[in-house]
Length: 266
Ligand code: HPA
Image (cartoon, rainbow, N blue to C red; front, side, top):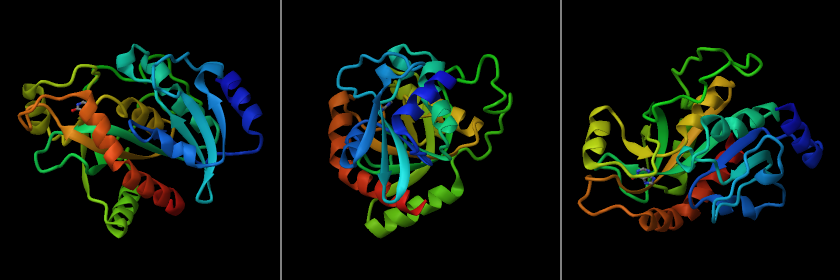
C-alpha cells in the first residue's frame, strides 16, 4: 500500500484530492473535460494489470469546479475474475491520498416498475447479494475496525444535496435500494421478483464492494445509478448490453451536469 501511495504522490506532487469519483458505464468521458494528471492502473505498483477492451483503466487527477478530485476512469469488476481485494484496493488508496467523500456511479436495471430507464437513482441503501464481502481476511487497523457499522453508508446530507441539484436542473430522479449481484449473467425474472419483495429498487454488478470498503475507511459515500433498462421480467423484452450502453449514453450529459454541480456544492 505504501509503495502505491508513494508512486502516485510522486506523480501528483502536492495535489491532494478531497473527493473521489468512480465513473461507471458511459460516464468515463466526464474525466476528459478537465486539465488533469493521468496515472494508468497498469503502471501503479499494487494495482492489478487490467486488460479489458474499451476500458481506460486510469486514475485522473483534476480540479473540478474548484475542488480537487481523483476519478477512476474504469473500475475492476468482480465478474471479470478480479478478487474483492483488487476491486476495492483503489478505494483504500484514495483514502490514503486524503479523499473524504466518494461518489460511486454505475449503470443498473430498474427492479421497480415505476422507475423508468433513463432516470437516475440516488442510492439510499444497498443489499449485498454477491455472496462475499471485501473485508473478509486480516483486518488493517490503520484503515478501519473489524466489524464496521453499516447504518448509514450513503449519507443523507449528500442525497439531499443531489435532490436539490436535480430539481434545479430539471433532472428526473428516484431514490432507492441498490441490490448487487456478481453477474456477469443478468438476473432471471424470478430473481428480480425476489429482489423487489426484499425491498430492492435497482440491480447491478458493482458499487457495493467499493461502498463497503469506503464506509469502513470512514469515507462519506454518495451512490448514483443510471437506470439503463428494466431488470428481467419487469418488462417483457430480453435484456442486452447494447441497451445498457445506449441509455447510459443518452443520459450522460445530464448525469455529467449533475455530477459537476454536486462536486461544486459538496
Ligand atoms: N442487471 C444487472 N446489472 C445491470 C443491469 C441489470 O438489469 N443493467 C445494467 N447493469
